[in-house]
Image 1 (spheres, rainbow, N blue to C red):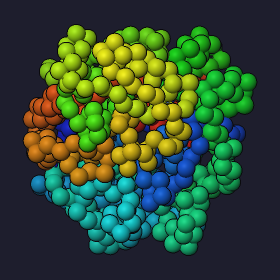
Image 2 (spheres, helix red, strand yellow):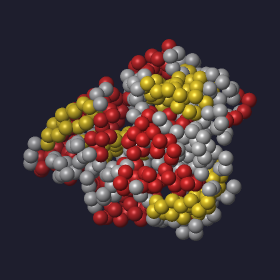
Image 3 (tube, rainbow, N blue to C red):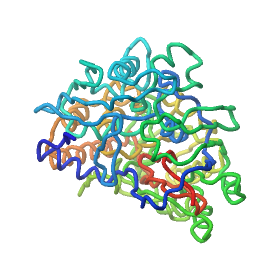
Image 4 (tube, rainbow, N blue to C red):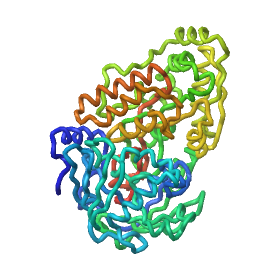
Length: 514
């Protein structure tokens, strides 16, 4: 394979990407074919058409990892490896990447996967007329060309030394490859009738109840696919989800630190296995800087300085959550000696609010779940000490993304998922004009730093730029970070072969049971 490591700069980038994750290696003798697995998800899946759902959440990603393939995948060291692309090569300036595709692959509907099919996926998402929220995540790509059936050429607006490890290495809204025939023939119904090239095919789907996927008998890598069937069940209540695992109704569940009691119980149960991955990124909150009182930097800074993350962690997650002071986290190769974090200083917070001179009253969106209410109540009490009055607005979890994108909030929770490179998310979240720059904040200096960070190949210089970006964001307090990303899943001890949860994805497409 032509490895995309033709320069020392590129090799260094790929090596540090190892903080992210990929498939875990298991002895071949341990793998057992046949049987099925049932997975309990946090929420119901809204669909698969990027034009409809915009950005895939964790529940969608569990299913999309089985239904769709991507061009590359990441190995245990975070380096890109072949999947639908067999090899890749950058131009000297890293603004063009040429991929050679795997021959003979077909979509579930029998139509061929080739360069034209991939280009159709990209063009559909990129087309401004389609108004896809997914488009901003590929804004760094000028166009994709298909010079022949098995050659794909990415033409980028700016150099990207780590491109094969980014958008195309897991089945997110931009990386999952759909059948053009599928979306053209099914129209609006395609959202619930996805067609990929992946190891599993959608057999049935009852909204709010279950989705059943069956093994693709014609999969190009079928010898490494073991389960005959995957059943995905939405189980929004954490306690019910854990009880379903204990009873054997499901074999594996999504979980997080907010279910600390369940995680700690599972760690002591020999019949269960806790899977965990400390990634990059963080749980965050965005303040709408175009609405009072968050149009005043003093209020924003006061709320951040009134936080006590250690007390929050203890109150919410029994101390499991790791406090965050920047958007990169321990799993990232961006390490800042000085990230500009505002100090915890209740007296200073009180003084800033007093200087503001007006009542600080606002609403915060929280999910209408025990977890959401608990987080809201803890923050409410912390801010009350400083003289700020926060009203909790409980909404369905599925309501938060559209409310956030339409800027119908004063303060909203969000998350920066872990990634092999911070560029895409940082640029999308903070550059002027981005549909996901939720804070409604515009700063030419921040825009300049974000652009510089994505075009420089030297990793040390990129680290310096991202740390400078962090210092500016922290100073302006347009977003704030609470806890670093740590991902969890709990399974029966019989479930084997589950890879690390890169970006929080629970991928069971190559797992098996003892």
